[in-house]
Amino acid sequence: MKLGKAAGPDEVPVEAWKVLGDCGVNWQTQFFNKVTIEGKIPDDWRDSIIVPIFKQKGDASECSNYRGIKLISHKMKIYERLVDLRLREMVTTSQEQWGIIPERSTTDAIFVACQVMEKYREKRKPCYMAFLDLEKAYDRLPLAVLWNAFRGRGVSERLILVIKDMHERSKAAVRTPHWMTKKMDITVGVHQGLALGPFLFVLTLACIVNHLEEGSFRTILYADGIALIADSRE
Image 1 (spheres, rainbow, N blue to C red):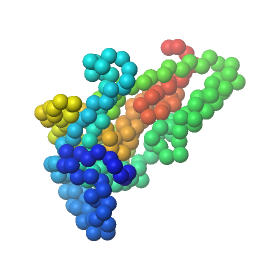
Image 2 (tube, rainbow, N blue to C red):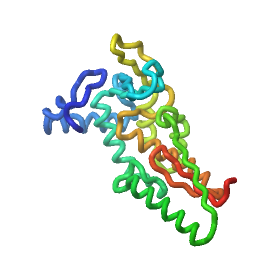
Image 3 (spheres, rainbow, N blue to C red):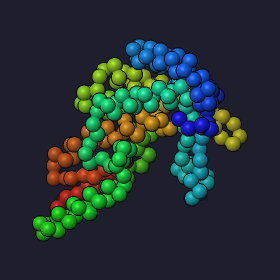
């Protein structure tokens, strides 16, 4: 993890964990193993602080013109990165997904789209593409859909249990220039600001896309962006 990152509600900076050296690594290993076995995270990991950042466009009084930066305990961030690595070892993502996957990029997705259009030209068939941008996709993901997607991919119940607990009973307060709001319950969406969040989303999206591809569609995915390809407007 990079140094100089803002601390979460516990106000413990990432530098504090780095200076502990091997002693800190051994302690965290034992503690994280206990969390995984029990399938329960500490209650203080459930708290977060949201800092609204103006997008520098539009009306500053409109909430939609802000993006929220979520500050979470660095202990939680370290643990979820380990969970993310374990999950990526167990589950393969859709071959049509070109975002959030190592050694894949926007350039690759554009190349595939060009190749698809060229194939349609060779076959003298019409090619139609519809581009979808899922607005605030991470914030709106129904968690029940996520757990079903996990089970469909053969993820172990122990790992599902701990990831589920990481998202249950979550609370967040909003930090404004003038005060801190009261804590609010977070009941939908994956955690933003964590390495695990984007991967959870693309796994869920892959299950939805599989149903689309049972019809006459072909898809190209880049994170929360979707290109639907067909030989008819219908």
